[in-house]
Length: 331
Image (cartoon, rainbow, N blue to C red; front, side, top):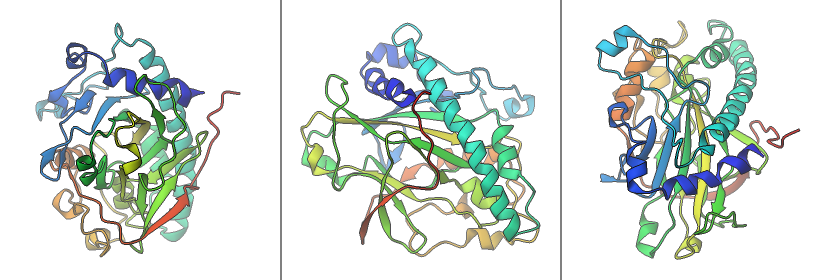
């Protein structure tokens, strides 16, 4: 029910007047709070294929940090369309908080796995990072309709890794021009993930489940035992001139800004940097991360380097994500 309540609002938000959307833009935060459209770089050009609304689902006012403020970071509060779309706030927070709570449960299992593999790993680190974080970020995504075949040359979202600890995401909801949900299953388009052997898989998430993927911060903190999941979102010809758009929610669970981005003491820096030969189209961590960096420094360098890479599909497989699933139906 939480998914059903929130995702149609992505369409309504994206279709607010330009005047209303401007009230929700926060360029001083690198557009990481509120509304963002055309701010990301894709293939060297501004990406207008999707719009995003960012907010912290757990708290509206971030904790103030004087040191970070001096460094130029604006710890901005959430901004909500209280007049034009008042229901967005409550439904965003309900679903976002559910995803974080399940993410904490999953992180406890991941910690147990990594601890067995490496005794130098801090016990319960991922669960600690997520449960104590004041900076989890939800992103309500609206992928605009495709109007011409030329638009198929670009993905809705190119290959990249998430830079946080853990990302939870819902299955996509497709809506028509009026914002009503439609039954639509793309044979080729949708979410793709890449395995460690270089194969690309079309990922199917059941409507009443949440999928989770690893971010670069967890790759660093576990010394590479857990690795970030390369992924992208692909358009398909079936959507041309259909007027159908795609909506989904992703919640990025990440450390507080002062968390150090260090590996376990027995893991070398180079081991984490070792690039899979199939992932040369993913920006290298070496350009954005050093031992003893804070998460704040790592995030700032990542934001400034955003430029997603075009998709090539050597082989396509179909897979249903089964890392963890939880019913979203209200009991």
